[in-house]
Image 1 (cartoon, helix red, strand yellow):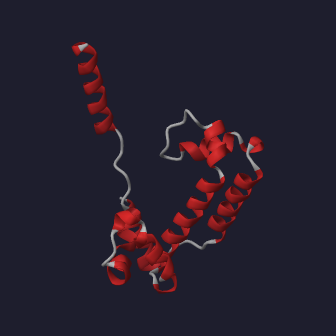
Image 2: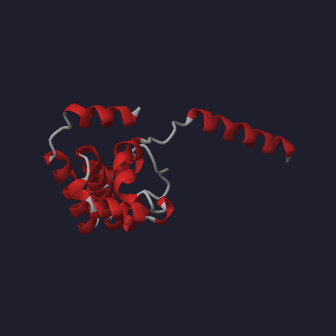
Length: 143
């Protein structure tokens, strides 16, 4: 038993070392806007996201894009929840693996999931690339 536990601990430790750290780009891109509009709110309660959405017109371009992207992803998650359970149950979330799984099963997805994915793709394709300071802030946040 000790032998198995030691192997598990070593494997877990290696996984922690090998796996990339989560990107802080969303936090970095919206940091100034969060401070300006939502400083007194608790980040864990979900109210900061609502606050940013309420101030969307006043946000920096990069933050506005991040808020829109998060909202679109939330819609896809909601619309595709049953499809993910059906087709991607054994797929580990992260690094686009769920999206790749859904794409692999594209012809079998529910109409709601297909519509949400299509809307998300159209929205992403319609947005012009960031330029100037907004692009620099986005790149710096992604590193």
